Length: 349
Image 1 (cartoon, rainbow, N blue to C red):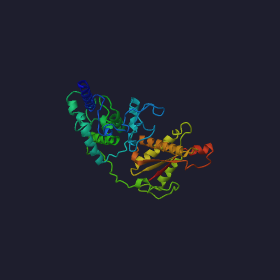
Image 2 (cartoon, rainbow, N blue to C red):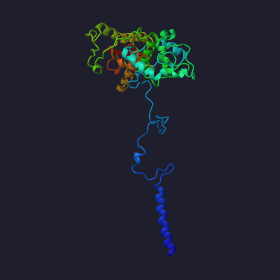
Image 3 (cartoon, helix red, strand yellow):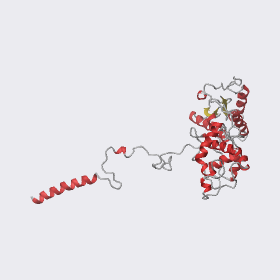
Image 4 (tube, one colour):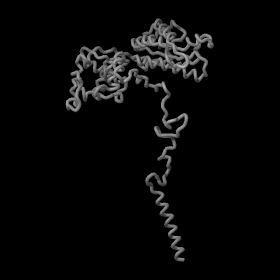
């Protein structure tokens, strides 16, 4: 009897001991949890690995964006020049889309104080705390008032801020593209002095109602002027569209070489008219599925938009859309007709 009783008590104590032990977390064992889903999400966590498959070869939960696409509001980050010597020289022609208004220059001064003054000093004398400490040598040019800074193209300064140069590291993570241009305007003001710097005129904003209310009918080449736009400008822009053509298979998204000169002229027109907004509608001129035509049309419109941005046009002034096969003119089985319809429609508003 005593042995049986001892065994019974031992069994009860063992069960209780196991129970208490299982409630205690240790190592990878979380123990007993109340509402475990609050601790471990049932949804995929960003950047965690998933099962590998044919369609997801790297097992990424957060997928890469579709090749060639641009996130909304990020068009300004498109920069066409590589971080090479040739890229630096080519950047001389890269133009600002942010006007050097006094308001923008003052914002540039604020950003300069945060990001640049530590090395280059308050007035650009290369006498900031870091250079003064001799822990890092200053640049070869003495100050911002030197001829080097006065004459250097703004595009080269943008390239330097974006990638870094010499001992100066990239500031792309600290300054958005728009902020870089504002800092550059302030640097140029420092180089010549406030009394000699020519500020751009402030431009009042225009209510474009999402770009639809003020659009001209695309088939009307003689519509009334919108703001500072003349009917002649509308007609000229629409004539550009007929000369901006794309290649056929397998490079349906790529522009023909003859199109670049037209786009360069269009870019200069847009930069010269600060109130200008441009609607870019991609056409296909091919017999595709409705979904395929919509995608190809958007790809072509986005290609034109990206090129104009690379030439200094403000991304906010460009609206890319797709018409798919809807605007196909002529015989759809005729090769020449299809070639002429591999284009975009351009509408100023």
